[in-house]
Image (tube, rainbow, N blue to C red):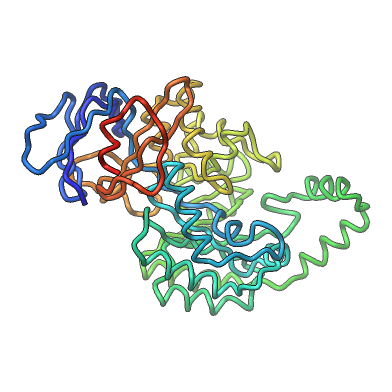
Length: 399
């Protein structure tokens, strides 16, 4: 860890953007945030000039499927998990992500069939957790995404939780005819695949007939998680009734709500409502469901995650600010402080405030295009990737 001062930065706090501010970091903790430059004669401190670049909190990505696809970028194409972990970390670091929740599925037979991986699900969890405990560039945690039709893996959920592997848990149900696959959209997708409506309905009934864990089992697992203070998310809620039921079970995160009514009800219940940054950046849902930008503008979506494309977070928050959907500091809160609150990390990270971990990123936003210049995690300035810039030569001596 380094002790350093950064002056002449545009510092993004939860409530404002401070032009020409300064920040002091001591032993990896933010010691001071100032509206003006901090005296640079403190003994033992590096002095850095940001030259007007943006200094914002590091991004906290609570849901990204990137790890599975880094291990298996193509069907049957397996790469060593330690290689995949290391290479993905570089990409995440370069995208300004300082804490990531690797969202690894379990019980999701369709996804397993598509990947055709040689690794068992248990091997993926064990190896990713082992890599995360090594000296890493960023903070790595595991988000277990459990498909409720995966009855055979129900006991494994408890085992993984008991072992301490899991920091976030979500219940999923990808059965067609509900959630993100309502009947009309399912039949439309079938026609595009060249499948007749009769064949599609037969396929649908077969998938609906797959046994799922019971409501009692879901409640038992939810209680087990709550006893260990592990936050729980729902997935693809499509009705107010589902939101109410989930809230009663202690589920605190409503992830990817399908429609505005669902997002609104979850907000009324003080749940964290999470949408995809990819939805924001692309201009809508790939399945024609809720437009995340509309939900954010209406104030019923307070958190964004990358979902399947990690670079989307940084670009989407600046897009929201540029298009005046939210002030820049509030747009940045979606992927930093609000995300930290969703997973109960907000006391230690998620914002540039004295006493918190120095998890920050330095951004060049010239030409209205955000570029990560440096990623700082617990006061450690990343040296495993570099981006050329002529605007902050003082940072080169930190490599």
